[in-house]
Image 1: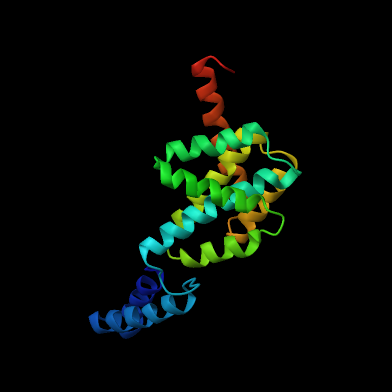
Image 2: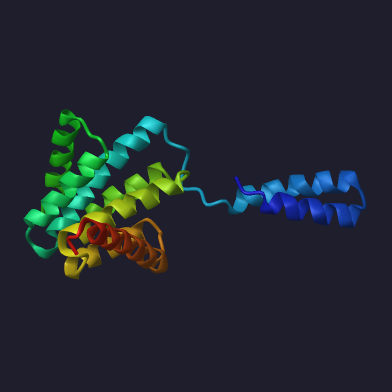
Amino acid sequence: MSWIGKIIGAILGYLLLRGFWGAVVGAMLGHFVDQAIAPRRGPRAPLQEIRDKFFAATFAVMGHVAKADGRVSEAEIAAARRIMAELGLSGAQIHTAIGHFSRGKNAEFDMESTVREFADSCAQEPNMLRVFLELQVRAALEGVDMQGPAKTAVQRVAALLEISAIELVHIEHVLRFRRDAFRQRAGTG
């Protein structure tokens, strides 16, 4: 919920109508301004629906990004499996995630509609969109160091999520730094 319109409305109402009731009327008008300019893609989806779409889209898009250069490498498969392990997926969930990953590798997979549908379902949860993108960047970094067609595919995902190129670069740099710091601590870099 945005408070900017309400605050500005209350201040203007107070100054123009000189008093408490002016502030109340201004805040009410500001509320309508907030409602009119609030970015809305649709009604809020139930939490379980968001989780299901997040799960399916995450691994399907990850498969699509991995296949962007024409083949899926062992490093890309290992990256997806590490992410599955870090998410604490059960055996059945891993099996389902692998199915989504395989679906994403298919040439007929419609990545754009999958990402749009996911984004629409959690438009009121912008943090979910960022986590989704971070997982795609992590998988691409661990798989092919986010280069070539994989980078282009991740950039397209970010654009579909309406996440700026600057924000994507920031996410990539933070994740590269973490990865490199971990490797250095582990003595592998």
